[in-house]
Image (cartoon, rainbow, N blue to C red; front, side, top):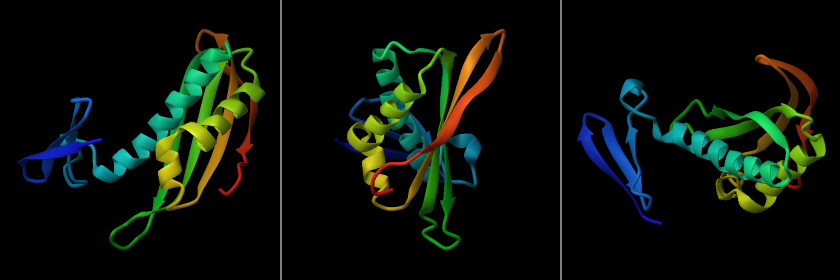
Length: 154
């Protein structure tokens, strides 16, 4: 894989990789101009595992109506202000979604498929939580199951 950033002005850049899709990057002092590089790491983690999990749930014919993956990362106070720990939270809503299917999808993502998780989990500990909601229609959701996913080594 190849990636490149091109300077625009100040601390603003446009980045692209093999896909050719461009992303605006900016420093934390000008967030209206783009995403910060460290923010992109958290987004990459959320996006990578989210794509795995929703794909697996669809293959398992789960009736998912909404799905979010939230990443919260703590950062060191001193430079280079690396992530020191993170929490991934999977929030699944649907009709009759099976908790076991969600857990298996998360397990496969975190232990086999998500390359971003495989890389960053070597650098800092990551906790994993999940919530499963029943979609009752008209925007109403009822919490059915929630818990912490435990997997080896993390």
